[in-house]
Image 1 (cartoon, rainbow, N blue to C red):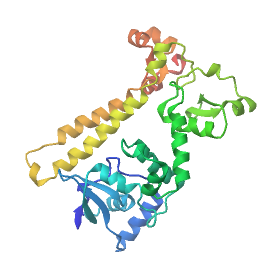
Image 2 (image 1 turned 180 degrees about the vertical axis):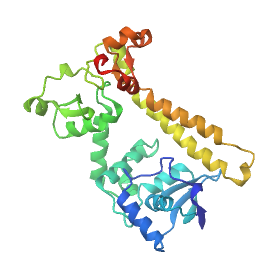
Image 3 (image 1 turned 120 degrees about the horizontal axis):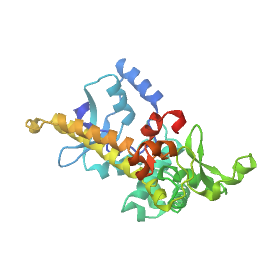
Length: 305
C-alpha cells in the first residue's frame, strides 16, 4: 500500500535503534533516486488513523531527504505500543545490522514497558532477538543507573553505571570543553586531577553547589527535556492532523507556532550556572533566584562571569 510520507509517524518514540546511521540513509537515498526498490515499511495504524512506523526508519529518512511523496508500506492494525513491540526485534535478520547500542536500546524499551519490564530475561530476549545473558547484563546496569545518587543528572546515569560496571568509583565533574561528565575518581586523581570536593555537585562552569535547596533546582533538567519532547511530538501530530481530509476545518498553523515556542522555552530554561557575584550585583532577580540559564551566562561580559 502506498502511504504519503507526511502521514508516516517517525517521531513518536517507536524507533528502537540507539540512533540512525546517516551514511546508510544517504546510501538508501542515492539508491532510491536511481530507481532501486526497497521492501515495504512496517506501519501500525490505530483507531484514529495514526500511522506509527515500526520498521524502516532509514528508508523513511532517505525518502524524506529526496522528497519522495510516498512509500510502500505493510500496514497492520495496532497502536504506538504495538509498533514498539515490533520494532525491538526488527532488523535482527534483515536491513542494516544492529549494533550493540541498538540491541541495548531495544532491551531498555522492554524494561521500561509496564508489562514487559516484569517478565524474565528469556522472554525479553526472545522479543528483542538477543541472548538472555545480554538482557541480564542490561537489566543489572539499568539498576545501577537507577541507584545512582540523586545529584547525578539523569542524562549521565548510564555513564555512571558504565564506570561502576567496570569496578570504578564514579563521580561527576565539569570538563572545560565537555561540561558535566562522569569519570572514575581513582583514575582522575591518579592522572593528576584535583580532589572531587567530596563529590559535591557542581554547575556547568565548575562552581560547587553548596546549598541543598539550590542543588534541588539543578536536578530537574530532565523535566524540561520531557516537556520539549512532548511538544515536538504534538507538533508532529498537529501537522499530520492538518492534512487529513476529515480535518478540513482544523487549522493547526498557530498551534504549531505556539508549540515551537514551548520547545524553545523548555530548551532555554534549565539552570546552567550559579549566579556570578558581579552579575548578582546588577540584577535583583538573578540574585534572588540564585542561578542563571546558559543563554544568560553566555551573554554576560567576561569580567562578570
